[in-house]
Length: 320
Image (cartoon, rainbow, N blue to C red; front, side):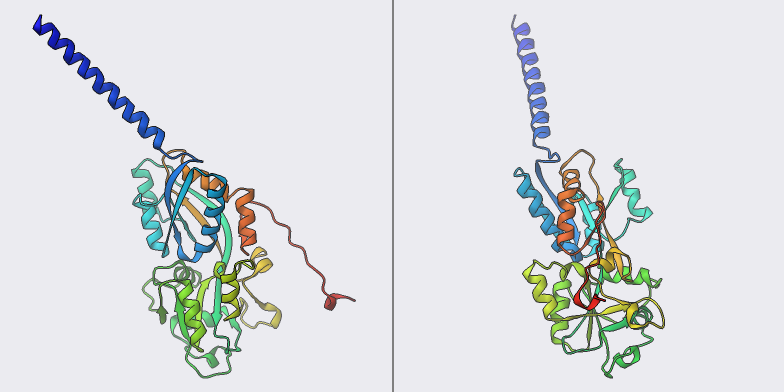
């Protein structure tokens, strides 16, 4: 009899453990994020931080049960966070390499990349510098060290050009290296800081500086910070052709980017590493949907998933 009672108690205990385990699984499942609920971390190249902050704020206002933590990093570090599972997705300016994509295969996760917006690199100079035009070939020569002074690239002064980037691992430097087909071993003579904001501050106080930043930092006409930035520096116009006329130079704003006339135009991509239908998917759906693309347009960038109309507005000078 004692033996039977012991078996009954043992079976009951085993049943309790099974139920407890199932309860824990159900609890874990219920706490997992979904497209409109939960908490995640995302990584963004620091050049695109302003637009991501605007998108995330609007998304969380629409879906109160969500929390999205944004980590701004240089491009290489943002991708690393995503690949290591520390960020649900990375917002960068390139596709992953084959070696990077291999991690998705190893973890049996589908590789998904989404075009989000188009922007460009802005070349900024000190307010006192009147040399606001530059050719792509001269920019390449500055990066390779063939030229180093303002009067060698059409400027009026003999001062030495100080190229300033936000970070050695940023998308800004990498984009120009790729754009000019420069080998990764090429020693570019530049001064590196920590972020785009520091580049702007440096250019404001150094008359021979030529800073390279993301357009997003100076393009939002409703952002007081962006307005203050653009008032404190000059933005250069860039020409692709070798013997340009005045009409061949384009600034990195509005329709020039939309019509692909600006030579340093680039596309912003979102790389998602999510094995389930989660909050990362929900946020991307919002960012590439109507509301998210309106935020892109308001920020002075070009939507990539919604059509926009470009209209030429006549001024008094255009009147016959």
